[in-house]
Length: 299
Length: 266
Image 1: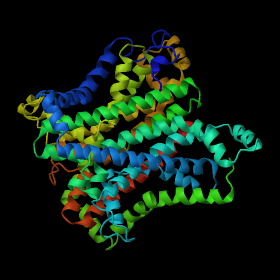
Image 2: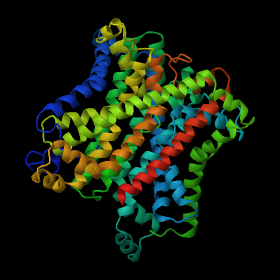
Image 3: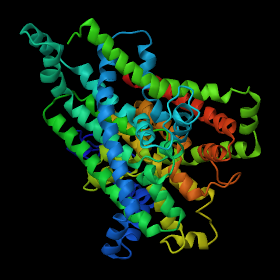
């Protein structure tokens, strides 16, 4: 996710006369490509091949079948709602963590990453207990679309917070002071100064959260269940595999894969743009990388 | 922007309220629900033969996937940062793929590759069972956790620069000597951070493993699959007992992440 190493001025090993194992001989590169091919590329190629094995017409038929279409619409709509909510609350939380002081702040800061570390099936189980039919606080969401939204909110919460936080930390507060001295109110300062500066982080965080939400499985499974109205795309794919419609499962998988790649492409563009305009210090890049890295928990 | 007291309290109310409902109460709930009927039932579930087997299998996943991805991750990061090649952008893009793909799709991909009629079906025909067996689950775990060590090591390698490695080489160190004595010690906290994330992901992986494993009790169940099965069998205490084990591991992970972040920054 970081700026591509090739774009950075650091000298390469051979030019600087450094000897490191496997570098410069081609052996290292060959082994890396071999590993990536066996683990990642060949399996995904098998999905692509299966998706189009019966021709593009059949592919389209599978993707636009009523149930597939319904699951894709549900997933996209819920994911959009979730990223808007987490965009707002994530920015508020980042602001609290950077600009506010309150007891327990460092604990809160650590807990933000919990969804990255907690297995998604555990998240699903506990959300079900809390907001399910036996809800101790009287909120019944199990097996509704609201459950899909809540589950996705849980797993994508850290993305925006962790993308916005470093930008807020680095921001030059003199600009705000200047605006205030010129008579700008808080809302104007936020809209004209803070928000534009946070935009690259917010955009990247939202795109990452969206990509994650589109493919989410474990946290939705128990809580939202597999009713026709609450079957998200990943659950739909699992059902197709279980009923042995592998071509159908693969076709819908390709749609998901394409959408996620598009979003990750957006994140790269935003980061490149941010570097070029020096909106943020170099700090922005490793931190974001860490966020992507923080997928943790497994779904 | 120095928010006036009213809006400051408003933001605190919104932000912390959201966090409480979404994260803090659920976290407390895991502990509460596990011990609702005392320590006996959850302990029995976790120490039942199936429970112990699930724990063992989860540890086997970690024992295989984490070292492999760590070695690969360090090597790949070295290659990306220290060696200019036209392949680099390709490798960089492929590394990100596991983040872009839904775990269910990852499971499906292995299912297709090693299943009947798949390109690698011959492996099973030769007698090494991949699907509905441990090897397939290991492959799924490696796939989903592949990017972490690379992603954490690359920025650290860029940051430390090449001066010390150059000095070592000038003084006659060979490749491995330079790596063990100069490079690795300087990137160790970054690598460790990546290892923590890899471990957490492997322990918690559900979607990809559930597709390739078939989730057979006592045979192909890791802890997260055990949680689901217990829940489906209406054994909530059992599901919570295993969930608590996973949640405690997640808290250890969080603690480790914070510790390593501080070491990295120091």
